[in-house]
Image (spheres, rainbow, N blue to C red):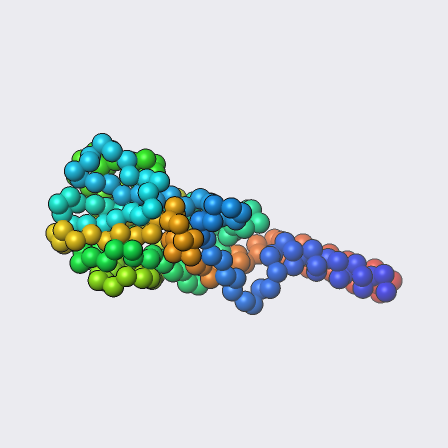
Length: 234
């Protein structure tokens, strides 16, 4: 009876170590709350006509092709790590969706690119080189993560699974750039992390599986169980 309890405790410890159920995905959502919970969203845009002026802490951030050109930036910090509300590095990302809510719908087709260069929320047009954000593999990824073009107010869902997979593998998370792909002068305004209605703020949803335990760790558990079994036989 005593050995059975010890075996139970050993497996309970292993379950805690590995994060719970091994056969089901885990769902997490990151969205700015300003009260308790997540509060690490960074978003802004840069403006070609106000090249030295930062645009953060506004209710909206924008994308626009011309007159002036506006390019958006957003990052969810602290997603991965060892904290209780973080996703462990090495997790398998099953799916991830980034949701924006348009408060002003435009006609500027916009590509979303993973940023590969760090930017502060106070960044300006001139601090990005004076020519906007370039998807050249130095400032932003050449690959388009997803794109949108809508003249309807409301939610826009973007598939960012591949980018979250890279970040889970240890690639630095610098968020995304919203880069117009035409010269339309009708802008998108997107509810920012400071928007009054919390439900309309940018939201990142992630479904993932916990990392597979290292073989050495599994071996230790096996040895422990084996030792208890041997003791019981004696």
